[in-house]
Length: 236
Image (cartoon, rainbow, N blue to C red):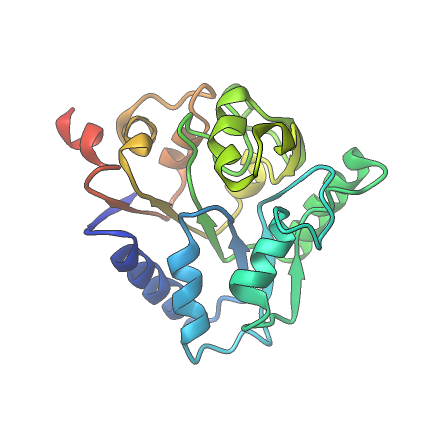
């Protein structure tokens, strides 16, 4: 595990961009992508670059259940707005939160990942240590699945909605085992509210109560974080 401390999100996005660009130059063809505030600067850098994605595939981590692709709070909409409109991929996959059979959609998503092994996976991290929407207690063996979101996750995501009551209570998410198949993982974290989760991820016990801790067992993980997010780790 490599830890890179950065001044702020702008520097973190630039370093993540350099890593992704280098992996593409080395032959990476499939990018696993995340939503939320942490990767926004990375996507801004990618949009501003001359990197060509027309021969690449993207596979997103998750999507809310019940939101259509044209809902401005859906993760498909987020990705179109932040990246895909400016940098179209050969194919871009996001879980189908409107599927009539969500469990079948989850199984189909894992087949998709098997067909397109992920070269570089971008991750954020939740305050409770979740990656994707894999909440504390999720088995490390879990593949793509339907998730009941915990109250802390709903509260954290409420800032993106006009009212907390509008935040979906379920999501379909790439599972922990699915995430761990990626050849390289780049995790971005900024702010003191992520400090406990980052400390547990880096140096705590590997436990399903902190899903991100499983990354200690991955062969190629890069943590890009500011001093506030690293504060608890550095004080241990």
